[in-house]
Image (cartoon, rainbow, N blue to C red; front, side, top):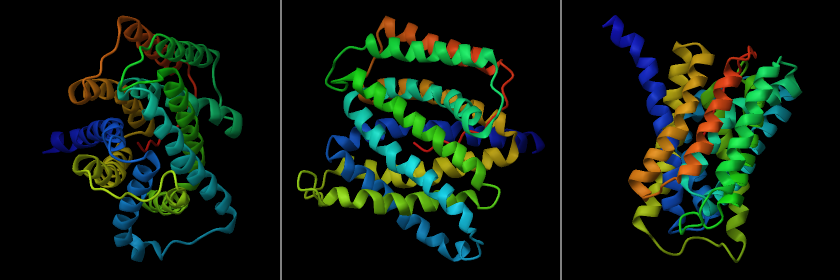
Length: 302
């Protein structure tokens, strides 16, 4: 029984990464039936409706006026700008390639923490970061144009910008978690995200959905429930039971799962050059992790 309890946090983190990886595939499927902004708003709305159940517990939270700027920065980075870039990324690149770009998130967090929080970053970490950037560029330049990836160079660039936003979100979250429950912070993102993306539906070129496409619509529901609630809940449980640095290491499983799911469900594939480029990304990450930089907890929301 004791051994099962010790394995439960690792199993929770493993399934959280699997769920987050599946969000790339779910978004690709949802985009086949609906405009990206319709999908993102629907996702935020579904998540917000789920969080209505927790409002009574949120009433006990003590707000601090000086935290509003951090709350807004957090929500603007993710979901607002993050999902705009990710939607554009998955319109133009494959789920497998987008998943590979996410491997750079821990490095981006370390760089932003160095710039804004004054945390130490070693020369070895910077070398690893440079290699990972080179690998991501190689991955993009060696990409083939396909029906599922019509403009992989633009798509991978947008996914990189989405990771920059996710890193900004993580640094803001680092400041807030000492005073606010993680569940409340996620609900705040969902509510503000719904308000932010709703005006996009008023644009004539986008509008409100007028047809029901079963699989894309179910993908939107899946994104709002299993990803926002399920993946976050599992990750939060895992972080509460193991050191943050150990939990953050699980983020590197997302690219692996994304490639496997993209191949199995969407029929995607990587060329030999792309596999080599992906290998360079992981080499850069491996080098950076041995650089002695202060560990920063990574919070991801796919």
